[in-house]
Length: 331
View 1 (spheres, rainbow, N blue to C red):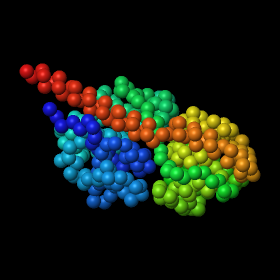
View 2: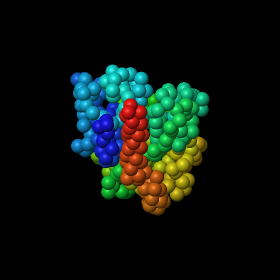
View 3: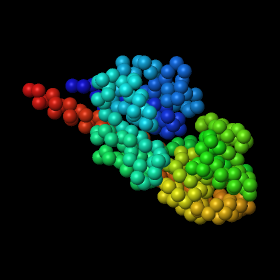
View 4: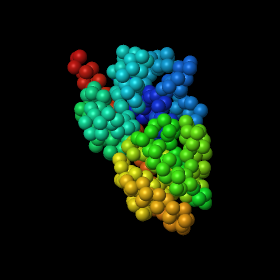
């Protein structure tokens, strides 16, 4: 019988979204990430940004075909259409496959056909909104909502400013709400942190220090028009920080207007609410407990990693059953 590792699944994936990989790595399984000599895009290995544990093992890309894995976990189209064929052996190409869809469709919001059509691949969405909008033709489609861990950091809100956490915001334009950010900042004190926005006074804060850093700000603002639910939004809520943003995509399902923050599609309304929170710190502090409780209900890290491990074991069990049937048919 094949060497299935049911109790401690061995997962091959790529380091595409470092924060997601970090939270995924908090589960009871082993994750292998490839790297190449240049540590180029998709092949950076563990990297130096996140405090991964010993269960995240980086391996040379040219050695992938010589290592035993149980599951291949894709996180972008390049992984699925190119990387697997560059790295995997013929035997490894037959392993169970899962594709994480981190984003809603870009080409068309409702009619875009998902590129994964291989019928035995499981597609996992990170939000129900993603699942709703993608036209997917494979039978096994799941949703595993985000899980985050913020330690003992709690919201303080003593700094009379709002904070935005987005990488490369200027280059990502209207979809990520760069114009909205600029408009709001004309009327409300607003800082931006993240890579690629130095011209906006932005700086990059390493993930282990991020929660303590943003906890000082009065509120968190997401100017994004169209995206999946950002992990930084979940993290802000988990420390008890009021969140403001557009009333679009998944955000209406996680923000209770006037209780855990404010959402609206009228930017002027949001600006008024920001000014209110800046003027009344007690209002922001009053929202903090409700925000944190909402986040604990929605974004439990224990729920998140348990759902992932259950899916890994389910996929391995299915493969084991198919293998046994094939073995028995030979006799």
